[in-house]
Amino acid sequence: MRTTRLTGLIVVLALILAACGGGDTAITTTPQTPTTTNGGTDPGGFTPGEVISVEVARVTPTVDDEDIEEVAAADARFGLDVFEVVAGDDNVMLSPYSIATALSMLYPGARGDTAAEIADVLHLSVDDATLHQVRNAIDARLGDTPPPMGEDDTRAPFTIRPANSAWGQGGYPFLDGYLLTLAENYGAGLRIVDYVGDTEGSRQVINEWVEDATEDRIQDLIPEGAITVDTRLSLVNAIWFKANWFEPFDPERTEPGTFTRLDDTGVETPLMHADLRTGYAETDRFQAVRLPYAGDAAMVVLLPTTGSPAELAAALDVSDLDIAWQEHIVDLTLPSFEFEAEISLKPALQALGMRAAFERPVGDGADFTGITEVRELFVTDAFHKTFIALDEEGTEAAAATAIIIGLESAPQPATFTADRPFLFWIEHGSTGEMLFLGQVTDPS
Image (cartoon, rainbow, N blue to C red; front, side, top):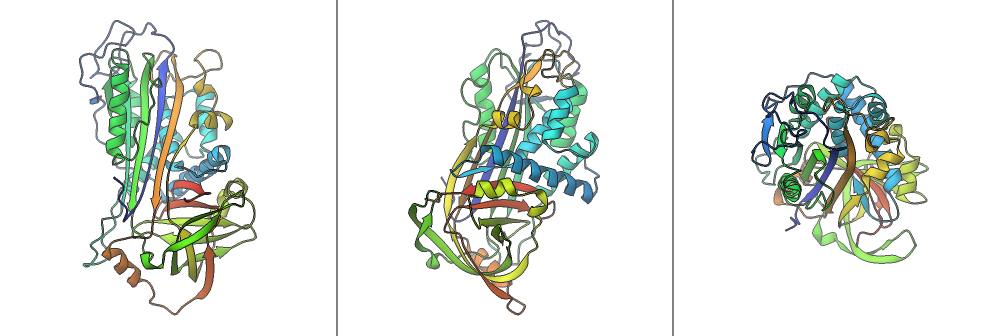
């Protein structure tokens, strides 16, 4: 059941790798995984989902803020790339953070052109060891819970909850070094499943983990038929976000209004109104407003001067995301909305140049010999789902937060009326990580 008094966003991505045939490998390099004599397909009698390999503690990362900023900027650029490929005329949202994290979990197992293409798509500029430490550091900062706004702050706490997991065929010879990277930097100790003996059961146990990680918002992430007896590894990232506005909208000011869609037809929808003291900017391409949450995050809404949100996103560069905010009293109009989205991630990544990973491991095809010694793995599919619900309602503590604002003299006024399609993203404050990127073309 949807929580209507708070904003919730969830995004999940799974990458599934399959063996191209059974192979002849019989010796496992993971000490806690049993040796097999049937091509690494014997699950060894483990309970599905049990973590048995490289069960080590996640390390405390030691990276500079500059490295975090560099990776976060690359994630934003990557997000704009994917958005340009998948955005059409409908509501859509994706998580640059989630997709980039899942691909980073895949990256240490790639070699040769396969690794080079992943690095190019992700716009990686840091060395491999730094990348994984930065991912670790970003997850740690996302999980930090800010202190209450005061003794009278009775709101549900601001929450960003990331989670990673790796699901491998029992008895398959995964390399220790690869599993160690996942465990130490992503908190993803290998979870054992039996793709060969119980294909459907394996899919269900992974989907159940996703549902639990996202408060049941994302269900059936991996569809029927996506996992087969040839599957050997699934990499999953999930992020769940929940926050109150720093300064909430007054429900009594919400009233029906007309939202003009891309085809110039109008639809009646509830439009929220507020006079907010916040960041505002104008360029020849867009109006922008920054809406902070009561925690370390904010939503940025961009209203194109002309054209569609997708066309605006395609014209933006990472430098454009560093908006020169000026404080204004903004006469704000914004629709409440809720939608789910699912993007075709595999063709999007292929279109961006990540091709070898999806090709059978012969010739110029996939090379994941950093995962297992025998070159037999390739990515068979990738899935990405998102959910967002936005409204004006908050708790009493949210109202108290709004009171804390306004201690200085009033700045210049501005008007921001999002009664036509707009672009938005949600950014994490201390890291600058772009958590979500989307467009609203029809809030009804």
